[in-house]
Image 1 (cartoon, rainbow, N blue to C red):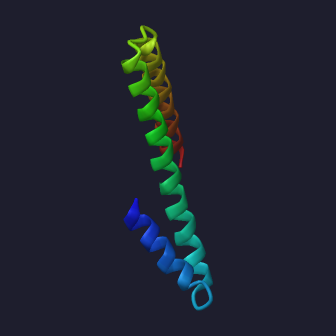
Image 2 (image 1 turned 30 degrees about the vertical axis):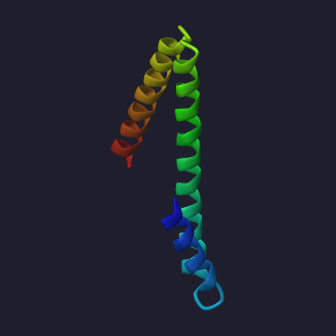
Length: 82
């Protein structure tokens, strides 16, 4: 995460000289940071389920697997059409 923040800072310093490239890379870096933050939230949620020995944990995991499989199927169909 520190590396991403460092790179973002460097691109922010280049905004005046290279606005288009900087804007694109700052957006990419921000999206990666959002993904990392979301992943951390999911990990904390799973750890909380484990800590409290929540029996619904397997239901959550199975639902997530199903949603992930549907997402991959949609992406596969989309990529096959393009």
